[in-house]
Image (cartoon, rainbow, N blue to C red; front, top):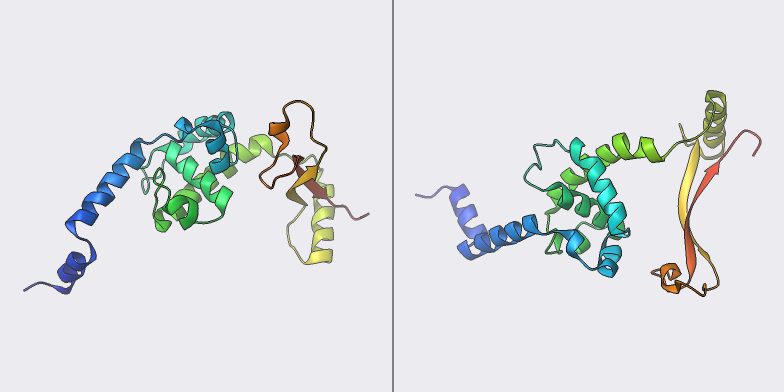
Amino acid sequence: MMSSVDIFYEDSYSNEELIIQRLRRSIRDISNPLELNNQLFVSYFRLSKEAFSYLLENITPSITSMCSAAIPPILKLACVLRFFADGSYQKGIGNDFEIGFAQATVSVVLREILNIFESVICPEWIQIQMTADEKQAARTNFYSKASLPGVIGCVDGTHVGIVAPSHFKHQYLNRKGFYSLNVMVVRMTSSNT
């Protein structure tokens, strides 16, 4: 007599489906996103191959998670950047043959890589030149205006429209179809503003 677990397992996956899953996983694990052409790479990950390689080189020594140890670091980074680019688990990650992670796996990888970004990448690139008194004044101001505790500044990205330059036009054409500079704006506050 079969147990209910055996019946559930047998009904859930056919041998063909298991073979397809294994094949898909083996193809995914040997794939290399850096082999994509430059235009496709940027549209998938929203950064250049050079920036991707920089991130990969700097985060790889910190990747120690046993939970997702079977996944190569290059695919973990690709997964996280693809998630940032699309803001969706299924659209760009689950259905992408090169990445093809389940939602639960994406969650584990996201947590791992974001923690590494926070401890390795952010301290190198994000620095706020404020004294302790200025930080406290900013915290107090943000809290009094918006009830946001612990905030000393806000960052947002935007496209500032420009007239198309005469050279290298294509480098300024954004994904929304107009020429712009992509900028990050930091709003700092003090008790005077």
